[in-house]
Amino acid sequence: MEESEIKIDKEGTWYYRGAHMFRKEILCVFFEHLKVDECGKYLIELGEEHCYLDVEDTAFVVSAVYKTGFPTDDHDNIYILLTDDSLEILDLSTLQIGKDNVLYCQVKEGKFAARFSRKSYYQLAEFIEQSENEEMFFIRLNGQKYYINRY
View 1 (cartoon, rainbow, N blue to C red):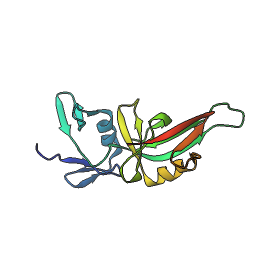
View 2 (cartoon, rainbow, N blue to C red):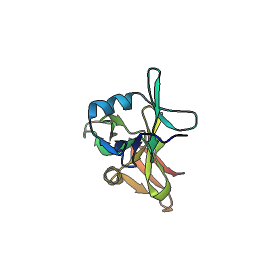
View 3 (spheres, rainbow, N blue to C red):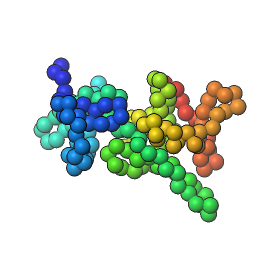
View 4 (cartoon, helix red, strand yellow):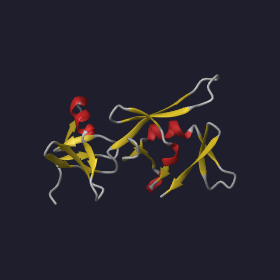
C-alpha cells in the first residue's frame, strides 16, 4: 500500500507532505467527510474521490473539558471540545485507558475514538475519583458512577 500524503499526529495536528495544515476551512471539510473503513483505516471520501490518511493514533483529539450545571439544576454535563472545533457532551460510558495510560472516549455518536490531550486529561482528572479498593477509577455525575475501563 502506498504511503499517504496526509498525516495526523497523536496531538491531532494535520500535515500534507510534511507541511502543517492549519487552514480551518479545509480541515472542516476533511473532518466532515472523514470515514473509517472495515479494517479501521481512516479515509476522506469526497464524491468519487477517496484518500487514506496516515493517523498516528486518532483523528480526533479532545482539546478541552468543561463541566456545566447550576446549583438549581438537577442535571450536570461534561462537555468536550474536539480538534474539529465541535463541542459535544462526553459519553462517560465510553471512557477507556489505553497504552501508556492515555485516556480515550468515543465521539461523533460513537463513530470515532478520540484521544485526550494532556491538558484535557488534567481538566477531566478534577472529576475522577478512586474506588475504595484503589484499583478502579470513576466519575460521579448526576447520581451515577461511570467507571473508566482499561483496554
